[in-house]
Each structure stands twice: as structure tokens, then as C-alpha cells.
Image (cartoon, rainbow, N blue to C red):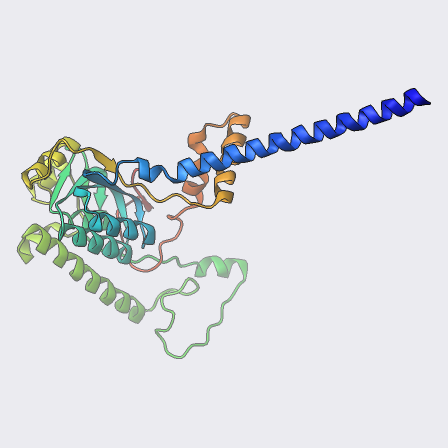
Length: 328
């Protein structure tokens, strides 16, 4: 009996020791994660943004009203460490309101320090509008530039509803309320209303290009028929100022008094700072690694479900075969 009692006591002691070491291990892992999180969340302080530099900001994909980007552009404008700005544009366009908001933010930067737009594959429609907010536009010879114009699109599913036996009844205060809609062909009056709205926004867009490129009204209208141009054609038409890459952008900044030896630091979107989001992202990466999925693919869902499914309101976007085109 004594041996049995001693064995039970020993097992209890062993369990207590194991529990202690397990708890200690969990605490160590938790502290390591917290330390890593703190290091990563403080990376901006280690990025060199407090020293003199050239800021680089990317405007990519479909344009929307992007509060985070607008805030970031404002911070660049107010930063005394930023001596010049490279605006990297690679976009087929987007909503006119989104383009307007970003364009105005770029103009606010240009009022304080030199801004050059570096066009990648594409700067069309609202993308070109944003690029024109800079003081100098550089594009590749094969870049696609232009598509100055505005459009409004809506589906008409009335025939489909008829085939499936669905009829939508509408009671409204006036004939043009909620017109056009998906359920009935648009009336001539509705089309005329939308056309007036489109042409007003188009006139505003043309005015921006005319002012920023020092064109006459006739010169602007000749280029504002929705046409797109290669970088070489855009240079010949004076829609851009120079052909080349980032080296040309830095060389232009030098002409404005910016030291060409300053480092170029990209101002990236702010990361979520909650600890739970950090753990979630870490877990997703670990899961992707476990399943053998490349970590670069973690942004696939964002691209598939993201911003280009629907564009509300007036848009200024370059389409091919009915789909927005751009580097995604």
C-alpha cells in the first residue's frame, strides 16, 4: 500500500511539473508573439521616414474614394522629411468621384513640394486624371495613356425577367425617379438625363486636362474622345512630358532642387495594428504554408471579391471587351 501511495504522489508531482512547464512555454510563446508584433508595428519608425527622402506612393488598380490613401497623401504633403514625391500610377481608372478626390490630394502636395507621376503599364481615364495632378509625367514607351472621358453603365434584365415569369411593379413620385433601372428598358427621357450628367462631368474632366497640360480647348477635345495612346504617342500629343523610368523621375526632381542621392522610400498603406489581426494574418500564413499554398496567393480572395465587381455612379475607366483592364 505504501508503494502505491508513493506512486500516486509521484504522479501528481509529475503532473504539476508538466503543467508548470506547459504554462511557462505558452507564456514564452505569447511574449514572443507580442514582441514580434511590437517590432512589426513600429517598423515605420525604422523605415527612415524621419530623415530627408523622396517619397513614393503607388496608385494602382481601380480607383475609388480611398480614405486611407487620401490620408497618406496628406501626411506626405505635411512631412518636412519628404523633399519630393514620385507618384507611381498603374490604373485603368474608376469612379469620377474617387479620381477627383485623389487628384485634389495630389495638387495639395504639389503646392508644397515637387511631384512627378511615373506611369507603369497603364494610366487611363481617372488614372490619367490623377497623373495630371503632378507637375511632370513620365511614362514607358509602351505604357497606355489617355482614355479621357466619362461613362455610365447599367444592365437591363427585363427580357430575362419576362422569360422566367417575373414582373416588377413600381410606384414612384415622378417619371425620372430611380431611372434608369434594371427592370425596364430606359426611356428616352431617362437616357437624356443621364447624358446631360455625363457631359457635365466630361466637361469638368476636359477642363482639368486643358489646365494641367496647357492646351487650348480645341486641342483638349481632339484628344478627349476616349482614345488611348502608347507612351510614344502620348509624348507626341503632349499628354506626358518624358519617356523613361524612375531614373527619369528622379532626374526631373533634381531640376527642382531635390538631392538625387536621397533615398526613395515607399509610403505603403498603413497596416492594421490590432493584435488579433496580427494573429489572424500569422495563422493564415501558417495555414497556407501547411497546405503548400504560396504565401503570395493570400491576396487572391481580395482580388476575386474586391473592388471591381461593381462601380456605382459615374465612372472614368478604360474597358476592353466590357471589362476594366489594368495590372492587378
